Amino acid sequence: MKLKINIPRLAPGGNTAAIASEHAISRHALPVAASEIGSDKEIVPARQKWLKAIKGILPIYVLTHLIFFAFTYFVTLFLLPNFATNSLPLHTLLAVWNRWDSSQFTAIATGGYAQWWQTAFFPLFPLMIWSLHGIVHDPLVAGLIIANVAGFGMLVVLYRLIEEDFGGELAARSVLYYALFPTAFFFAASYNESLFIIFALLSLYQMRRGRWWLAGICGLVAGLTRSSGLLLLLPFCYEYLRQKGFKLSALRFDVLAGGAIPLATGSFMLYCFVRFQDALAFSHAQAVWHRALDFPFWSIIHTALLFFRLDPLSFHAPHNAIDLLLVLFVIALGVLCCVGPWKFSRQEHVYVVYSVVFILFGILWPTQDYSPLHAFPRYLLEATPVFIPLARLLNKNVQGQLYFLVISTALLSFLLLQFLTGHWVI
Image (cartoon, rainbow, N blue to C red; front, top):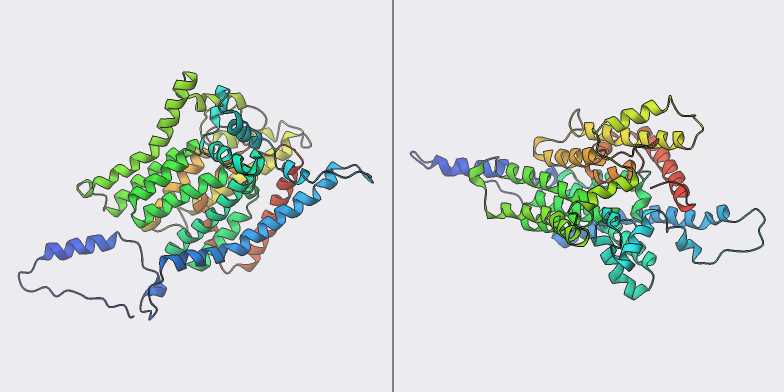
């Protein structure tokens, strides 16, 4: 079926306002892929597009999880002394994933919010663990299943989102770079990262399609998973106004769908007030981990200055070097979203808004000690669209792709090994 473009003829004295209105609507619609113009192919059903996305990310998902499984197995060599005659029980393969925040989620899932500071961990992920725990009879296994299933869905949604706006080739490379980022192993751990990001990306995907109620509902679910879900209100408002031509007169009833996003935070605040008489308990709990609100980039400057104060072979110095490298890398990608030949076009500025707000929020709460940026490389995984300009930058640059994949995979392997052996990686 060939695409026909009908250009209306304007009779003398015709209605120019109607044609101008149609032109205004088309100006703010999503761009049509170049491959679809003049194509004889039938329109691909939505189900086939999602199946294509599954096929597109499946090799990446399998590859990364084979890496995770291999390290899970070989980490036993770090748990046994040399030439040991004994062996470790089989459940060790699961126990090595029970690190740091994983235990907090399982404690909440099995015992509820017993302490006020546990409210730093939002309720949806522990609630899902509690629900699945009744079937698998192990909260850690439940958390791992939820995180890995959500991680698979997250990559599928990311592929579809990018494919719709930029094409399948860019989608595949963006997913690959994202899945091999050094802190991406948290998508397989019993953490809430993958659960949050799948719903955050689904919300963004529905925004781009103009399905505002679905965008609001997905934003609500994301907001019940992490405190940063509230930030989705900003790209929602921007994209809604953009598609309405930034005219207040074009607002419709569906703009209220954005109200579902802060409803998540509001409902948890109500719970915190009733349970602990502190509506902002989840925010005040940051002090338990020695975190405090600070100027966004001061933590980066502070970390750089620490190199001149700390022994280079101390515990903190190598950690700071890795954290600083990864944080600056993501910030640099955020800059590429806005400037240069790889930046997003005006119709794609919602990706800029989305990335910038998550980057800024991700570096607002440094720790007040010798490792100000710890956990920031994990938090910045939420700024998912920054990997799109990375894929553009490395397009047809085989040497650049090789450098990134080798360095990123090496850092991913090292940090995963640190995590599985119980060393400080959060």
